[in-house]
Amino acid sequence: MRLIGWSWFRRWRTQRTAPADAPSPYASQTPYAPTALLPLFLLWWSLTALGIYSWAGEKMPWLLVHVALPMVLLSAWAFQQIVTAGIDAFRQRFTRTDDDTPAPSDPLLPQMGRALLMFGAGFLLVAGIAFIRMTVFVGATDQSANTGALIVLMFTAMTGLLVVAASQIWGWRWSFAALTVCLTLFIGLYTVRSSYRINYLSGDVPRDALIYTQTSPDVARVVNRLEAISELRTRGLEMPIIYDNETVWQWYLRDFTNATRTGPQLSSAPGPEVQAVLMLQENLDRYSENRNLLEQQGFVLQRYPLRWWFPEGQIYDKRPDWREAPLDQVSLLSRAMRAPLDNETLARAWEFMVYRDPGAPLGSTDFVLAVRPEIADQIGPGVGGSQ
Image (tube, rainbow, N blue to C red):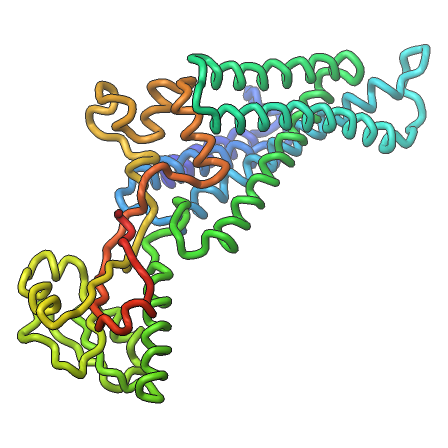
């Protein structure tokens, strides 16, 4: 792609720098106009980045920067072009005299601001009505066959009527520019809200595709409870603990002086001094004697998520038979491609886009905490991330 872009640029630059007397259609143009090349470059960059990172098998959240950056720049350029055209059209419409010649420049900023506020108020009213209707639709138990589609059609039609009405007063180009500004502000507020949710509300709970595999908050909570119990029993972190071959335990239990590492399989029953055992769920499933030895010693087993991740398979994964499989067995993306106006499709999309509800349990790798009965109530219950 670099070679293709470089070859095209050389050819374009050669044509732009042709002599004035050369029989070239570019002879009358300026030798070099970087502003004319910029949108083409951004478009090529956006498509190339989207294609390459969509094709690549390893998709990490931080790679979105490479895809989003050229699109952000291209969108900013397009936004500037649309808004500038709208402002120019507004100025031409309201600064002409009776003899159809441009009048002296008048301060149109207050007039344009009032017009934008009126248009924005209308757009906010339309969006508010659609939001309320969609919220009621998603929460209703009895939904008609076409309720969701009618809400989408209503929002589209009312927005179109708003643009048509505004164009009769302020002109088409300015109306489209005002709509662009309103949509940009609307999407910008949605982005800020999503950023706030992912940073300050969800945190280490992966309900957004931007979060990769994340250690669950139960791990730190369990370790904190064990530390508190150890302080009460030994006046320090000397409570005997056993943990298996999972590497994260060496970090989380680093302050316990009597923490002992074992392999994935227990060689013998823990002694009476051991108060807690931490093991991966897969080690209990693989070696049944682990569970037997712990239960024989009276340990209470509780399951917690160790690492969990966003259920991408239920959101955008495409199974080979996604066209023929029942709708309730395919991902949200597959549903949207097959039945975009289906009530259940719209409801699931709304729940995910607004509330980040993936509609499926979080994927997880679980661990089991085995503790003595007398301290089990001080830890708290756990059911595992996949339950």
